[in-house]
Image 1 (tube, helix red, strand yellow):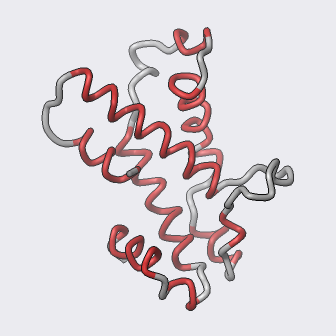
Image 2: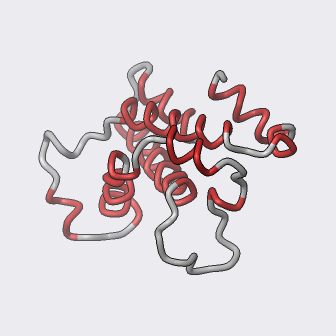
Length: 139
């Protein structure tokens, strides 16, 4: 859904209502991916939360190849303030800072998801879900 919404936003003219729906979906999926790929340094708040370290075998490759957390931290904040929570700060964005730079975000997430895939144990790489991810990433 993350890549699909980014692709739809990048192509064609859509009515504003559709753009808003796509942006909300993009923000939601971006935030979820961010929380999965960049878990906080604190212990997970819930034992049922799925995080990147549940899957990785090669932490060094992942750490070296992924986009730096600081380069994507804004997506978590932006999604939280503009979409996920009702806040007064959602109105503090300017014409310059309000738009989502979804292609830039997609490129940075692509890099991190590719690092994630490359860091998986071979047995996980054979799972159909991760085969789909590999195909989607074009790696």
